[in-house]
Structure formats: C-alpha cells, structure tokens
Length: 467
Image 1 (cartoon, rainbow, N blue to C red):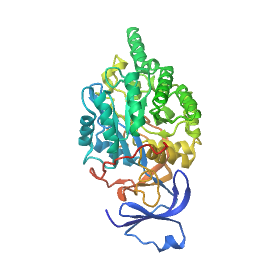
Image 2 (image 1 turned 90 degrees about the vertical axis):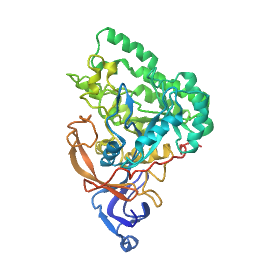
Image 3 (image 1 turned 90 degrees about the horizontal axis):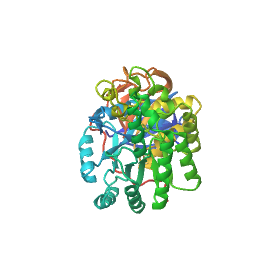
Image 4 (image 1 turned 120 degrees about the vertical axis):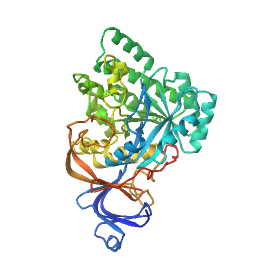
C-alpha cells in the first residue's frame, strides 16, 4: 500500500535509543522521525494517523529460528506458513527465518525449493531461510557457495539425531571450512547425540518411559561437551559459529570462555529455557509431553545463568525454535516411550510478550529487549537495518505496544495452530496493539487485517558481526 502513515506520540524504542517521537512512513518504509511536539513533527501530514500516546513504538520482532511444517518423527509441525506467520504477527514478530531441510541423498537446492514452495504466497509477514545441511559431500559444499550468493547465508548442522540430521565431526569441519571461505554462518545444534542415544536405550530398558526422562537422558554435560567441541572445530576451521537454543549453564560457560578469547562465537536461547523447567516435563498424566523439546528444559537453577548471559552478551539472541505439535494425536505418539514424542514447542506468538515481562521483572532493560529480539537477529543474519530497527530507510515493520495492558496466555486465545499453550495461565504485562509490515497494517487495535501473501521472501547478506 502506498501513501503516508504517521504514528504520533509514542515512545520509540530501538536497541540504541529511547525517544518520544513521531514516525513518518511512506511507501512501506520509514521516511523520517522527529521528536514529538517539535515544529518538524507538527508540519507532517499523512493519509492515516495512528495515535501511540502512552504506548511504545518498537521495531517488529525478528524470530530467527522457526520450523513451520517441519517433518519430524513421522508427523509434521502443526503450524503452516500461513497459520504460523499470522500468529507471529499477533505476537509482534514481523520477520521469521525458517529452516529449509536437505534430506540425506538429496541436494541443498531440492530442499530449498521445497521450502520456497511451502511458503510462497502463504505468509502474512516477511520471511527468509536458513539451510539444514544433513548430507555433507563435495556437491553439497559447492552448493553452499551458490546459496550464499543468493541470500541463504546460514547453514545448520546437528550433533544430535543420528540417522536423521546428524553430522559427524569430519562433516562438520568440512562445512565450517567452506563457510570460512564463503562467508556463511554455521548454526549448531550442540548435543552429543551418539551418547544420548545410549542413555535413551538404557532408560527405556529400565522402564523409564515418562516424558521427564527426555530431560534426564539429554544431560546438560552432553550439551556443554558438544558446545565445546563445536567451538574447537570452528576454531580449527577459522569459521564463525552460532550455537542454537542454548539451555544449560555449562554450555553458557563454554560460550563465555570462547568469547573471552576473542572468538567469533555466538549463542541463542529461547523463552522456554528462561520461563519453563524440568518441573513442566514432570507434570503428571503425560502432560509433560507438551514440554518435550531439544535441547530439553533444564532444572530451574539454570535460568539465572541464562538471564545473566543475556545481560553480559554471552548470549546475543532470543529466538523461539517454534516447532509446534498438538498434544492430541501428535505428542501422544510417545505414550509409553518418551523417545517417540515429537520434539518441539509452540512459541512464535509469545516471545515478544515474555521478553517484555522480563523487562517488567527487571531481568533486562527495554533497549536490551529490542536488541535481543529485533536488532541483533537482524544483524546476525544479514537483514539490518532493513529489519530490526526504526530508522529512515528501514522497512516500516513497526509495532505499537501497550506496556500496561495485562493478559493471560492461553490456548483458548492464541492464534498458533496447536491445541495447548506452553505458558497456559501465565499472566504477563504488555501486549501488542497494532502491527505494520512494510507499512501495511496487519493488526490494528487487536484486529487482524493482514492476509496470506503479503509477506515476501527476504534474501540476506552475511553475518554483520564479522570483520
């Protein structure tokens, strides 16, 4: 939609500044900002004016880790690109980066084309892709160069899930060496999957089949060991490394040590590790299955170290790893065998609100909220300043956020296509009121006005934190 939109009277918050300012939007981009009440701001006219008095005006969230329609464990993640991106918008997220999957025996191109086909014409907000590399060979390595050139600049590998996504150390080293040359960023699922499979087999043999054992066999030490190993392989390759969904204090310690040594090592955590724990995995009557994800939820004492890591920048990004499976018919596949429970939680709609609650609770500052949820993921994955900030020339991906509204998270009111909420009954302060994506109103005063197909594919440059 062309034309001019004016957002008046709000507190504009970016990763670097807070300013009571009016925001002028023209042809889908931010045209200008001016302090509210100044002569400049007062002379502006627009086709549409939005009143943000008493509200925050923040960049749309960038969720750099989602899995829409992911095939896993004989089923598929329950959110499609249509339902998942609509739910993201409701939660104040205006860009996702999802994971295209290379299957063993197939090319990267086949996997990427399949994900383009799933997403194209179906998304309410803009999207990009990472590439899951499951089969490292000479052809795969050549394809990595081509994908970087066309804007798929990050590649995920797994030290877990032998027989599915798993790469051994040699395959990981080769991919890291390639990314050191082509500018790509290796994203690592750091868990020792070979050792975990031994512990799974032993637990099941003892009759330990309930969901809580999922957390017990996927030990924090095996996350820390894999994190350490990934860091050393990246160091050998001279490559940067981004460790996904960090959940254990011991893994944070490995990242902190590497960063203290000046290595280009980055870490991401997720709301579930900050707000949930093994207490949830232990809920009776198989309810714990709702909380099965990998890396697993940890005992509550890990949370303080994760919050500290976010404050000290040992962890830089909070993404969701949104990978929802319904309790009925999907999570239930693992009744009697925790290893058959599909791994993943819903959360794309909850992230911005939970992190605002962290501001209210004193864990992080307002600007840090925007930094870890908007600006840093945009920089990390080559989309800044088009995404992740409010500045002249940036896409007008903007959220008017009511910091005083209270809500109770619930499956009855969320918009994700899943039959439970991981945060059922949680009271939070702060709520998305209005959402613009490239200047188009997707949500206006809590009414959805967006549509499938508005969201467009966004090619990315390489990581902007590297020299």
